[in-house]
Length: 267
Ligand code: APR
Image 1 (tube, rainbow, N blue to C red):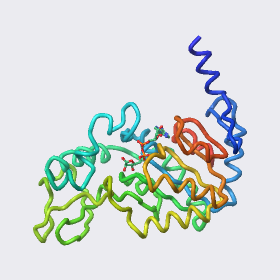
Image 2: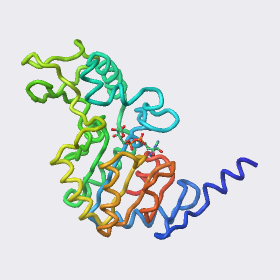
Image 3: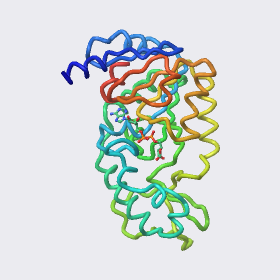
């Protein structure tokens, strides 16, 4: 009985103002995939990714059943205040996370976005909230990184940034050559997004014909606001996610399922 209900749920059609199409990968709802695939050909395309695209690479997401923020408190790990009060504790956590990411490999979802960029280098912009660097490791370039990069460190004293790929780090907290404590060059709660990256993202969203949001809960602003910017500027919005998100109402197509299965089918 519950299998029957599950099946009915999978096939239920989300109906809203934009006449969203809900489809399930691999169950004959190929028309949605085909429609999105066609739309990706001749477009100014923006792919906007979140932690979900790396889930199939075994990098945990932040929210959801196994999400990082279910087991760890963002207030004590992902704020400037937490870092100031205990840089060693914060760094222990990020050192652990760097270790997990170091073991991970890009998955077919990352690779599909790399291929879309290869096919349309001038008309494709990849905007990510992810700090894991897996898009670059999959071969994507010019990635707009809204929340920074876990492999870069920034000195809290002199502001100097550097690449650091040491896993595990040999000294916590790491120190700059000026003697200052270095922090991960990422955006924590309550901090501003890097101005240039944000402007690039908004410009791309405004110009997009198709805006495809992959693996994001669309809960964290201002990044999540890009979906609305794109929609209001006339883009066709596509969402790839196994679960509902608050941005679903803005979408023309909702492709339910894992990014690593759906994105390769859009090529
Ligand atoms: N394929 C696609 N989506 C998936 C998959 C998958 N295989 N697995 C999970 N998801 C979806 C979840 O359903 C969820 O909607 O990915 C989303 C992950 O959401 P979050 O964990 O909230 O990640 P994200 O949206 O990137 O978070 C935004 O929050 O804590 C901050 O700075 C952090 O950049 C992060 C920001």
